[in-house]
Amino acid sequence: MNMKELIELDKKHFIHPTSSIQLQQEKGAKLIIEKGEGIYLTTIDGKVFIDAMSSLWNVNIGHGRTEIAEVAMEQMKKLAYSSAFSTFSHEPAIMLAKKIADLAPPKLNAVFFTSGGSESNDSAIKLVRHYWKIQGQHDRNKIISLKRGYHGVAVGATSATGIPEFWNMAGHMETGFAHAKNPYEVGTIKSIASIREVIENEGPETVAALLVEPVQGAGGVLIPPSDYFQEVRKLCDEYGILFVADEVITGFGRTGKMFGIEHWNVEPDLITFAKGVTSGYFPLGGVIVSDEIHEVLKEKSEGVLFHGFTYSGHPTGAAVALKNIEILEHEGLVENSRLMGEELLKGLKEIKAELRIVGDVRTIGLLGAMEILHDPISPNLKLAPRVIEALHERGVICRAVTYDDSDIICFSPPLTITKEQIQTLIEKLRESVLTVKQELV
Ligand code: PLP
Image 1: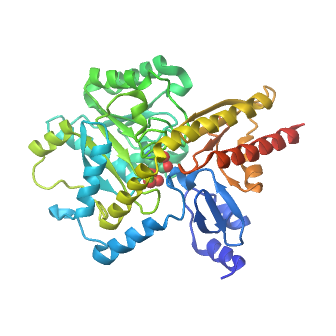
Image 2 (image 1 turned 180 degrees about the vertical axis):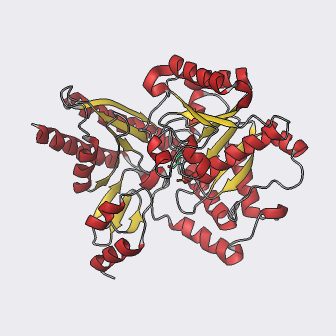
Image 3 (image 1 turned 120 degrees about the vertical axis):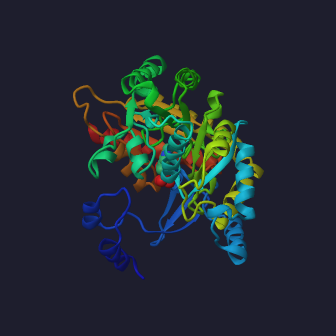
């Protein structure tokens, strides 16, 4: 089918996730991608783009890995799917749970599987509520998270998300959720004080858990100070509430460590994951729980645990995830993420030194951001989307974040990226920022 026909059918039949429906109707699909190879995506009309976001922060091992396709085919031929309900089991899910337990912090050893990040966070929310309930603490059900945090679009995950646009889409935030100031806006001391204030206002005996991303991704790659999570852990321990780390973006090597929280040297009670566990080759996520939580579930959870998705522990997904993790490990991609993140930061700093319009630049592994500084006379100009357009014209796919007063360009390329490819990305970014700057004059 030709591109024109596809665009018409797209308009007529495809409701896109997190997209402007008007824009789709006016202009048609932005890109129709046909294939991917490494860090590159090719459209149906033959244009090649650098995928500087790993699509949705998820294609960690890069596009077009045929080894994964082969594993999926073998698994599908043998056992494409069978359920894990009612304690039915199969080897791929068992081995994946064991592998993830081996990679996770030492006290987190049991895994509940889902089909993605939102389901993982909703599962964590329900699991922590269940954990308190079976111990007689029925009122401990509130979830505290941070402003600008993003946890997904299922009902619980939407409410935990600290970006009001997501609540407003279908009405309002659910009760039982509250948001504190994040450390990026106010620093460690004030953010911890804000969490404390929220806990006290809600009533400490009603708070089940704190749900936080190690690095806020969709909020604009907001990297907390080096003392932040130590203080978070202390505060959670002081009030006896559970600490859930949302590692949906930061897990599986994205930040230069297997899990992002390792940068702060603390152990959460639960970790939610998705994205990089399969690098997007299969929709799969999950929740890793601590031994202490697992013990309580084993001892006190009676009858059926009434929570499970048809695809919890999908055998093909599990086989794909195992192969993906093998690739991450064998190709040293977690270390490459760290090294190439440093390379990216070097390039971002050079652009900042040259072009006054650039504010803070930062990376942690291959999660990076560049902020645009604003002229005090026109502080509401949003330039990051214009830089994204200029990048697009130069064959680079990136993402802008413009919530509140921010104006940020985010980077999250595949962990396979090379030094030369980083240099190309930086050159194209420099040209794009320069073009937007010149348009201002
Ligand atoms: N949590 C975080 C930190 C995310 O970035 C995302 C998605 O971007 C989610 C949860 C939701 O994951 P999914 O889109 O797979 O439901």
